[in-house]
Image 1: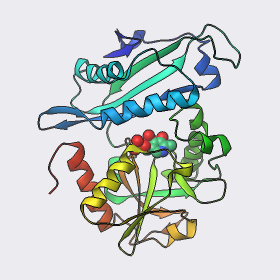
Image 2: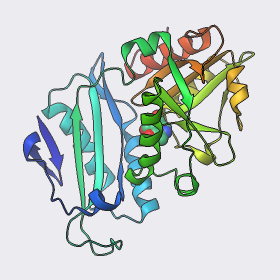
Image 3: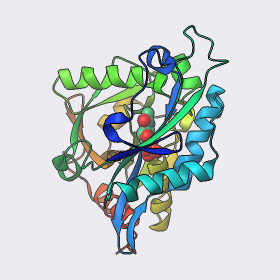
Length: 291
Ligand code: PLP
């Protein structure tokens, strides 16, 4: 396969960087996670423009000037899907600082951009989409920098996510739920959170969570079927008592949550509202009219 690297297509094995790459040391970089799906008219990248816009917003937040414009980065994503002959798959645009100097200041460093893509199935396993996952509230919360900078999909923000996910995995769960510094539900390690109670859909406001593009799609789809969406601070016990809960993300798509901290949520399986929104989401990404 090939990777788009600073405007050139290079073979997968040659898409390398120096060990003194600044971002490798200090974690100051930005990235996106994007999916391409097989649609009737060929392969389509889902909400490409929004992902490219968010990459540029993330870079702006970090004060990182990308040496390409949005049209070029969007085209790079289409090119990578086409050149790798992917019918469907996951795309990873990423921008990082070069290796000209060490030290915290990134002022005089070059900025590089890559776009890679590969086939990727269900992020949390195919079973997860049907039967839901077991989740653990993490001992790692969204700390201050994480919260004040959480609109940036930045490499440095993921230490928390990785620690949280690893802790959950080691304790025998599928995924972690991170709280904010006040103890309210923030998001998953790489997913936004939703719950259903008494026929209404609830999701945390975006104070301590990434502005998820899947989240936004689900809010739109809920609107289409007249399901009321309430953005509010959510507590752990509210989740324990919810009728249904699910995560959303480009990677996780719409993944039902059947258990939090060993408390069964609702019937302990994918609930009817989750199932309906999940089906609508898959219709949407595959460019099918909703059933
Ligand atoms: N929250 C975090 C921390 C993420 O990394 C992601 C993944 O991109 C999401 C939420 C979900 O966002 P999206 O639906 O745009 O993929």
